[in-house]
Length: 206
Length: 147
Image (cartoon, rainbow over all chains, first blue to last red; front, top):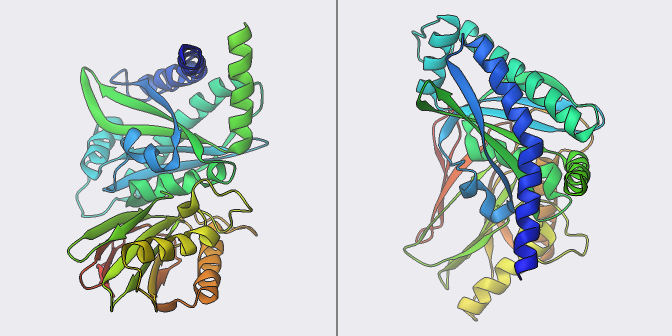
């Protein structure tokens, strides 16, 4: 029994060692983009059964604004930036000096948020590419307003086809000392998950 | 996701659905109902979690309701979900496949389809009143729909 506990702890450490640098790279990029105001940190690498995952990664059924980038190339997955509408507006104002006036999102606001997704995804995926030693290419960002759990559910499909246990990495945002109601989720597809498993094994034997 | 729940009069069942399919089955006469959150169309023989797949979820729901109310028969169904959230193109559209597989299973098990709210590219937040078998579906930016 203790062997199993030690084994899963090692695996969790290895996964944090893989995703930690990705979150740090994204944080550096975000600091540049936000003039040093916004930072990111790795919250959780969650491996769980499908039925338990959504509460574990704190993705509820509330209406959210999401920027989704689907990875292309030999390995795939989705990077999802999720936030409430007020938090998105606050970020737009801080990042691009645009204050929303209407009930919906203006083109400029949408563009600013998608650019944020682009910047984060490029930095995150570049770092991950080093860890898994395989090329990951982020696709164009999609702006989505929907229930958060529905979007994460669709992103998990590629892993669900291969088994009941799924992996999601969650990164949180801070504005100075304040935690922002923003989260970034990285959901690998089955092929990338396999590459991550290989990287975990290499980490254990290093 | 990939769960099933039994509903008794007075219960409210809730779920959120993207490309997954919510299958609500009920027997009006014996006042028993059940909901499955179907993730994929086919189990291909892999059955540790029967609610996850269309081909195993429908028999599971029937079994759950019959265990609760052995005389229950003549089941009806309402289905919702099966969206394509990321507007992807290509031969494999999991939402459509889920709908197709569930419709086929309902037919095979002689379950009457009463209503469906499926497809599109928006997620659905679903609330079911097990007393009346009324389903309330909310989609982002649209008025709620009840059937």
